[in-house]
Image (tube, rainbow, N blue to C red; front, side):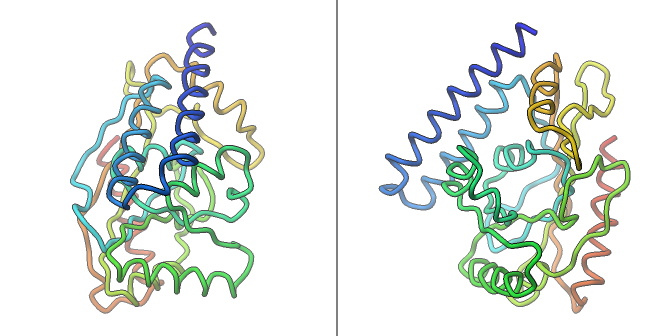
Length: 245
């Protein structure tokens, strides 16, 4: 318990420092400097929380590119930022979360109203524009978190942005393990009625947690429609999870 309390206090201090940086410094920084600071902040956050990071494969060196990953936890965004800076597409209610909304906005998050078909079209248009400008974007096509023992079907709508921008997609597999045993750790999961506070507390109590990020091969559309491509990417992520276990 003492270990978890100490980690929590350090993480809260780091969050406060991140907020201060965003509010006082980011407006004067260029985009490359912002991206570098986000990645450094995320790496430090994992370290303060007692989480080791293991990256397999090679993240895309530069944009345009769309990262497509399975979704496990509130930690996923921090883990991916620590592995490779990217702009996330997330549900719009995150924008209004205390502290988290400011951090997400500072990191360049694009927001979507998941229940609105019209807003999905708007976000796809925005994503297409940003990809054409050379951004690296990231989405969780399951649409919600799961435990990754069985992936939910990948939604195809947001892949239209990669098709329209003629941008490649990189599948990414996320997994949390107990580094002492090598077994999958479900402490960070945040599914359905799970409490985020319980999830955070259980995560901080794990003695030696490791976040594993496996980057697959960058792939072009090659004439596939978005639904076919989504199904292929789901199989790719499932394969990467099997290979990493």
